[in-house]
Amino acid sequence: MPNSKRKKKQLKIKRARHTGFCFGVKRAVGIAEDFLNSNKRAYSVGPIIHNPAVVEALSGRGLTVIDNIKRAKGANIVIRSHGISPHLRKRAVALSIGMIDATCPFVDRSHKIVIQLKRESYHIIIVGEADHPEIKALSEVAGKRATVVTTSSGLKRLTLKNKKVAVVAQTTLWRDDFLNIASSILKKGGYEVRIFDTICNDVVQRQAEAKELAGRVDAVLVVGGKISANTRHLAKICRDGRAKTYHVETEKEIRPSWFKGLDSVGVISGASTPDEIVDRVVSKLKIL
Image (cartoon, rainbow, N blue to C red; front, side, top):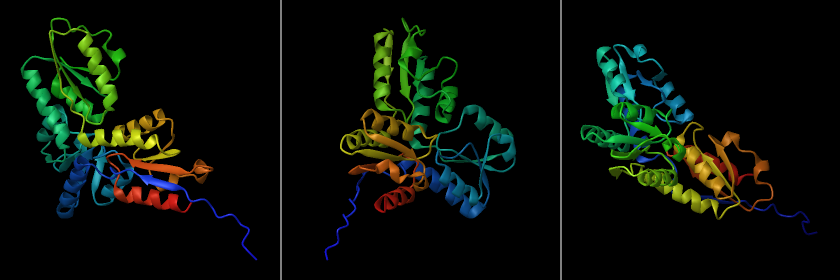
C-alpha cells in the first residue's frame, strides 16, 4: 500500500558568499591567540571584537575584558580591533602596560587620515555612532575641532561656510547612510570639502550581498553579535528589502515557527562572526 503521508517540503537555504570573519577581525583574533599561546594572560579594554561567543572563548584562554585600564597595571593589553584613543595609550605607558596592537588596518588608516587632516586645519566631520568604540577613539584623535554626526539631522546646527571641511566614515557604517550625509554636507557650502570613503571594502560587499539576498528569499537570518554595528546594518538592509529578517547570535536562537510555510531562507553574517557559528546555523536549518 503506497505511503499516503506527504513528504515534508525541504527549506531552500542560500548562504551568502561573504560570511565568517573579515580580514581585520581574523587578524585581531589571531594576534590575541598567538600572544596567549606564549604568555597565558592578557587584558583588553572592552571586548576585542563584537562577538560574545568569540570573546568568551578568548576569555577561557586568558584574555580578560576590563573597563578600567588600571586593572592591567604592569601587565599587557591587546588593543581591540576598534583601535585605542591617544588618552588610553598614554595611560598605558604611564602604568607600564605592554601593548599588543590588534587594531584593524582599515581603522588604523582612518586614524592616519584624520591626523593629517588635523595638521592641515580641517574641520573634521566623522560620520558614525558616537558611542561606538571606534568612533570614540577616532574622535579623540581628531580633537576639539571634530564633529560626530549619525544622521543628516545632526548637521542642522553646523555652519560650514568659509571652512575647510573633511568627512570620514566609521569603517562599519551603512554606505547608503554615509553617501546621503556626505551629499547633505556638500549642499551646506563649505569653502572646501574633502570626502574620504573610509568604509571597509568587506563591509560594503556584505551590504550589497544582503540587499541582493533579501530580494530573492522569503526570510533572512543575519548571524552576529547584537552589539555589532555592521551586523545590525545588515539586518536593517534586509528588512528594508521586505524580507522577514531575524538577527541571531547563534543557532540556539532559531525558532522553527519562523519558517513555517516558507520556501527559502538566506544566511548572511556580520564581519565578526566566525565561520563555525554560521556552519551551525546552516546545519540547524537543514533539519527543520
